[in-house]
Image (cartoon, rainbow, N blue to C red; front, side, top):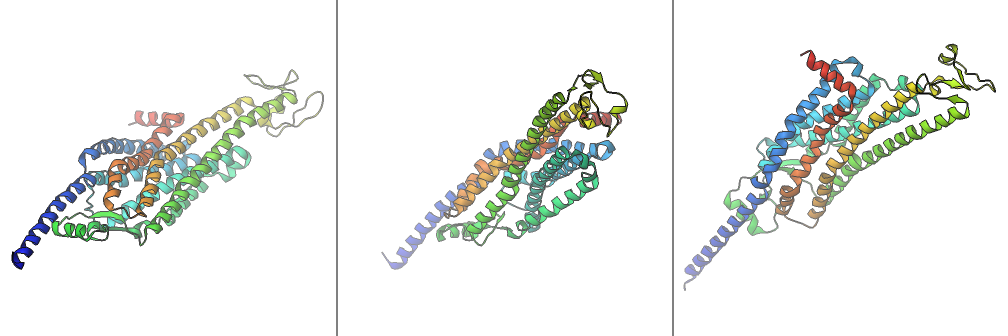
Length: 401
C-alpha cells in the first residue's frame, strides 16, 4: 500500500471518528443544554408564578400607596420588600424562563451583565429588608415609649435607601465577571479533539456565564456571598424573632404576676380593681399614681390597662408570626439553590467539564432557582392572608373600582 493511500485511509478514519464523536457531543449538548422534556415542568411553574406574583405584589404596593393609615414604618419596609419581589417577577423570572427553555443566550452582553446583577441586588435587598423589620420590631417591643420618636416613616425610607445602596455595593462584582461567548471553543474541555469537534461542527452556542481567573476565587466568592446574604441575616433574624416571642410571652406572665403581687385584680371587662375598689377616673389619667389602702405603689397606666395591653400583645404576636413565616419562606426557598451552587463550585475545582455542570443545571439548578424566586410570589400572599387591615383596604379598593 502506497504512502498516499495510507494517509488517505488515516484521514478517512479520523473523519469517521470526528463524525461519530461530533454526533455524540451534539447529543450531549441537546441532552444537557437544551432538554425540553426536563424543562417543560419548569416552564409551567414559571408560567403560573409570574402572573400570580405580578398581581400580588402590585396589589400590595397599591394598598400601601393609596391608604395613608397603611403607611406605617413596618409597612414601608413591606413596601420595599414588595418592590424587590416585583423586580424579581418582572426583570428576572421571564429571563430565567427563557433560559430554562434554551441555554443559548441571544440578548447580548449588556443584558447578560444586567439581569444577573438585578437578581443579585433584589435578593440581597429582600433579606436585609426582613433584617431591618426585625430590628424595628425589637425596638418597638423593648422600648415602646421611644418607638414613636425613632421608628418614623422618614427613618424607614432612609433605611430602605441604605439597603438598596448596600446591596448594589455588595454585588458590584457580578457584572464584571459575567461574559457572553461560546465556552466550548475555549478551555472548557481538556481534550484538543473535543475542542476541534466544536470548531468544525460550527456549534453556534453562546452562553451567559461567569468567567473567573481561577475556580478557587469563584468558590471563595460564592462562600462569602452565601454567608453575607443567607447565613448571617437568616440566623440573626430567626434569633431576633425568637427573642421577641420570648419577651412578649414571658413579659406578659411577669406583668400578670406583678399585678397580683401589688393587689391589682385583672378582669375581662374594664379589668382594673385594687383590693376590690375600682379605680377612679382621676387615677386613670396618664402618669397618675395609683394608691392602695396598705401602701403607696406607683403603677404606670400601661400596666393596669389589660384590654389595651392584650390588644397590643395580640398585634405583636400576629405580626411576629407573619414575619417568622416570611423569613422561613425566604430561607427554605433559597436553601437548595445555595447548596447546589456550593456543590457545583466545589466540583469545578476537580476540573469537571462544563457538560457535567450543565447536567446538574438541567436536573436541579432550574428547579432550585425557580423555588428561590417563588418566594417573591409567596411574600405578598402571606402578607395579604395574615393582615386584616390589608384585606379590608383591598376590599374597599375593589368596591370603589
